[in-house]
Length: 386
Image 1: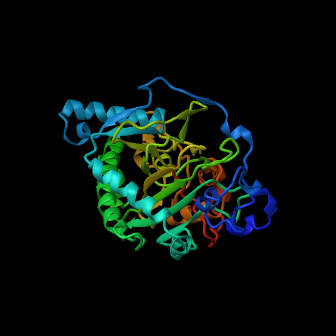
Image 2: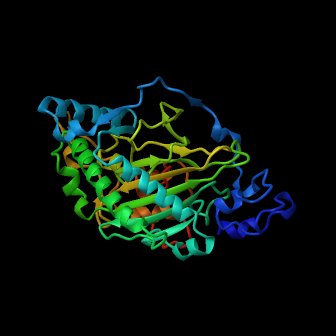
Image 3: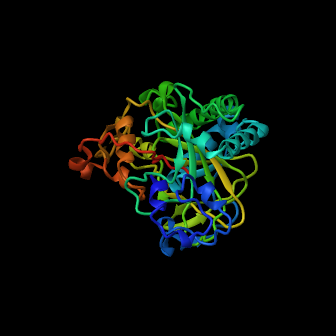
């Protein structure tokens, strides 16, 4: 674990820090901390090439028009949704119907979890990527050489609902929040199906979303004395179909667009949505999963909550057959089918590195994609989300 590696560092470098790093929050709150451990230091090139796009450039989807607009409004919104997936792999969703006080309450509930004493958080540490509740720090600590300035809480909320029992009230608010967000995600996926020229229910039925995996991921990025050397999360894409994210108003999310990194600031009461690897696979590459990363700062702690929406664990995800046949002839499948569960475990066995896991199931990588998936254990988190 990351906690064990920290004990190998010279204690004089961090005069008041604990001998073991049980969490980044604990480390960040160490009296007199002015530098970060070498194990958490990244090369400066991960912080370059950031641009500011003109206001209004990032696509905005009005969810109310998608579900209750006139036929013309809905058709226009479906088209905008498809363009957002194709050109950006990222968009904001407004007028989604999830109450603003619910968004605030779930952020407060997660802050309450991260503020628990370390020994109480350890009750929920988990060991395996498919454990229903896990908390910890960094990501896949068994294969990483540098660790991330991030603590996490992750639990499955569908098809079976799990939640930590602490702090009081978190379970109830998590259940309500996840149900409301899941409804929005399925509405978006219906529109995305149509934007691909498929039936609106295609993704829902093909990937058995009634039993689809919905994963709640809360991230804590404490203040950092050397933010120019640390990373909250490095460049990566998410597994699953769509990730819907909110945060506490402290920026840090960056997405890659046309080879450059773009700072993202959410519109009030909106969801930030990114496309995942399994939407790229299903669309045969028409819609790409977007690379994104999380930066840290020295001024304020950032909390984000991401909800991953994926297929059922037993669904084999491969390109939609309907997209491989056209008037121009048959289009080759660009990806090899793989069970969603196996993809998660494959991701667990690799370090977080761009789209390295998705690359394993590209058709040109058939030989490597068929490799046995390790049953890898450790307090790791490779379903990132920033």
